[in-house]
Length: 335
Image (cartoon, rainbow, N blue to C red; front, side, top):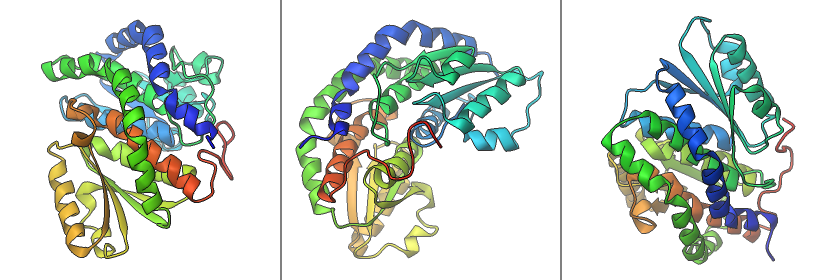
């Protein structure tokens, strides 16, 4: 039996291609407009804020551009704004109606910030109210954990920020970025069976620690918060690789499961130390490593790892008798 989420996973390449065709020039224009700002706020929640964490950590490794990631509530309730400041804000939301993110957009507009929304709904409040709106062309998405809307939203942020940063590394990433639809299409065909077996082997695990450093923390956050907890209804906790030695180091032991996201960059030094420490204790290490899936710039790692992770979560849900992507208490719009 195929659940609704299955087709949404399979829709990712065509969603990316449609979004690129429709929004490429628009994304480049926004990059040009935002290139002289002193600070850029990125606002989201759930899968959306995970894309904000990812692009922040990708950019800070090659640029001194000032990016501040916040939830909508934090921005509205705790962020001081000077009306004469040279700042901008990008709000991210699949529905374009997430209440706290919308409130952040409105506060930003009241204080004279340049505003951009990235949403899948052209008729949404965010799309209408932002100065500029990027529309990801995914058709409607129903799975709560976000598949095609996640990857097109992440793509949009990469296209904006790697066009802002003018250096050789950014140009290399941009060139490979526009090849991502082909990579995703290939990974959809080649990674399902292995991750179905991995899901079956781990179907009785109730708690997953999800660890990533640098570029991989945003995806580890999504994996724990929306994929395991919302999608597979499993307990999960995201952990910065550099913080393994505080807290989790006292809890790892035989029978504990840790999912590691690895790309081979400098941040993986601490990730590798944690992997080896856990291995020596007989921890159930699950490792998703970029080298097993693609030969691309390390800063694009999340685009390669997300597909096998989606298959893992999809089949983990089914092995536990759940409908992948269904919800008990939350929905895409009401919150």
